[in-house]
Length: 50
Image (tube, rainbow, N blue to C red):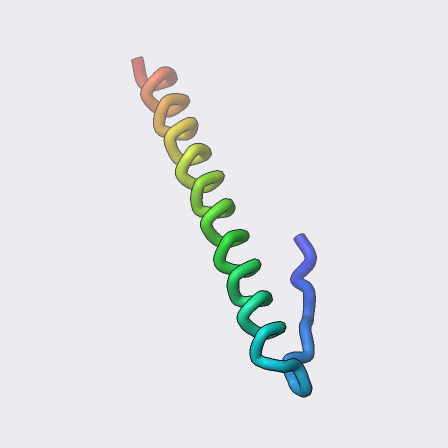
């Protein structure tokens, strides 16, 4: 995964708020994916331990 580098200097307040909101939504989405993956791994481990 590539991390995008953003130069914040010279951006107005509204643009910075938009960027923060976008990053917050991306983080929420990634946390949800992580939670589902963890749940899947737990099911796989439980299945294979029987």
